[in-house]
Amino acid sequence: MISFSYIHNDSKYTEELIKLLNSQWPRSEYSRKASIEKSNDNLPLYLIMKLKNDDQIDEIIGCLTISTVLNNDKDSNVSVLLENVLIKSKYRGKGYGKVIMKEGHKIMKEKGFRISYLSTNDQKEFYKTFGYIECDPISTSNFGGSSINNGETNEDTVDNSEKVSNLLRIFGGNSKLKKSGSDLVWMKINLE
Ligand SMILES: CC(C)(COP(=O)(O)OP(=O)(O)OC[C@H]1O[C@@H](n2cnc3c(N)ncnc32)[C@H](O)[C@@H]1OP(=O)(O)O)[C@@H](O)C(=O)NCCC(=O)NCCS
Image (cartoon, rainbow, N blue to C red; front, side, top):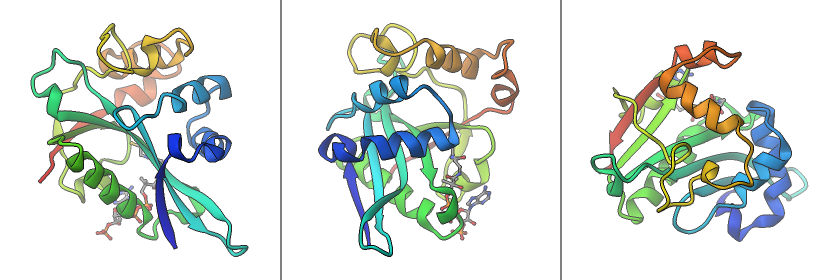
C-alpha cells in the first residue's frame, strides 16, 4: 500500500531519502541533509512516497520537492517550483510517477498555489502528460538573495555547488554541468 508523508514529520527516513536522491543526482551527504532539513509545512517541502515491501516494511520509492519562487516574479505568491521528482529505478514505468505527481499537485492546490513551474533536461514528455507546457525560465529561491523564504542556498550551511548549478540552469556556462544545462527546458502548468 502506498502512503505519503513530509520528511520533516517522518525524519527517520532522512538517510533513506538522501540515498535515493544521491542515487540519481550525486551530491555530498552534508549538502543533501542540509537541504532536506529545511523541509517544513510551508516551503520548501519534501514529499516522500512509501510502499510496504515484502517484509511489510515501508520503503521510500519516490519523492518530490515543492519550493518557492522569487518574490519579484510576477505571480510568485501563487507559484511554486517542483523539483527532485524521482521514482526509485526498479519501480519506474509502473504508474508511480503519476501517483506522486498527482499528490504533489493536490498539496500545491490545498496550499493555495495556482502555478507550478519546473525545469527538465530529458523528461519533457513525462510532464506533458500532466498538461505542463514549455515556458520562459523563472528565477528560483535557490539562488539569489531573497530573504523572505527558506531557499536552500540562501543559508551558509549549504555548499556552493547548487548555487552554481542553478545559475548554469538559467544562464548556461562552462563546466561539466554545461551539457545537461544546454538541453534544459522550463515548463509550467496552471493548477485547476
Ligand atoms: C520521470 C519519472 C519520475 C517517471 O516516473 P514513472 O513512475 O516511471 O512514470 P509513470 O510510470 O507514472 O508514467 C506516467 C506517464 O508518463 C509517461 N512517461 C513516463 N516517463 C516518460 C518519458 N521519459 N517519456 C515519455 N513519457 C513518459 C508514461 O508512459 C505514462 O503515460 P500514460 O499515463 O499515458 O501511460 C521516473 O522515470 C524517474 O524517476 N526518472 C529519473 C529521475 C528524473 O529524471 N526525474 C525528473 C527530473 S526533471
